[in-house]
Amino acid sequence: MFADHIRERRDGGEPLDPKNGQCLCGSDHSLKTAKARAARFKAWTGAARSRAPYGDSR
Image 1 (cartoon, rainbow, N blue to C red):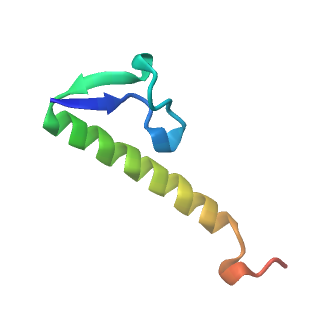
Image 2: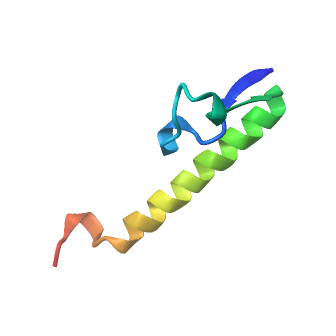
Image 3: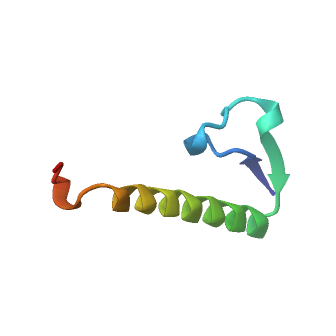
């Protein structure tokens, strides 16, 4: 069993708020974490694509 942050700390979740915690088995915790990382990466790459390449601000 894993103590899991419902809203990940990296995404602004409160680290010590009991309302932001839940108990998950190892496989569910790994799956939830992988989905959250994929969503962050997708959001990050979408933001990166909207910027000019190589820092060109023209």
